[in-house]
Length: 172
Image (tube, rainbow, N blue to C red):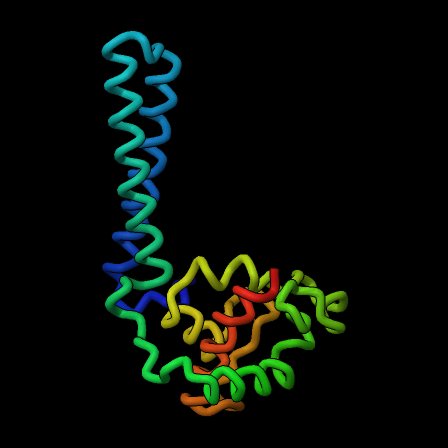
C-alpha cells in the first residue's frame, strides 16, 4: 500500500524500502558500537556511523511519507481576524465533534471512534500549514479523520488551518 502523501512512481517505494534498510543497518551499527564500548575508538566509530545512517534514513522516510516541504501547498490565505473567525465557525461545525472545543481530542463523538482523535494542541505546532491542509483536504488513512474536500471549499479549508494555529496556541 502506497502512502497517501507520496506523489511519485514505484521508484518512490523502492527508495522508501532502501531507507528502511539503511535505518535498520544504522541501528544495528549503533548497537554494535554500544556493545563494543564508547570508550574504545572502534566502538565510538560504529556508534557514530550507525547514528548518522539512522538519522539520514529517518529524514528520507519522513519525506517519502509526507512529501518534501517544497511539495506541500503554501497557505494563500493570510491569517487575518476574518479568516480565523471563519475558520473557528467551520471548526465548530465540522471538527469539534471529534477534536473537542479546545482541540484536545475529547469531542462528543471521540469515545465512539476506534482511534482517539489527535490532540491538536500538540500536533498542529509540529506540522507546516501545507500538511495540515492536506490532512483536512484528503483525510488521514487508517484513522477516523475524514476528507473535507467535498464539504469545504479550498479557501474554507485554509481558514480552518489558520484557526488551528490560534487554537493550538490558546488551547493549552
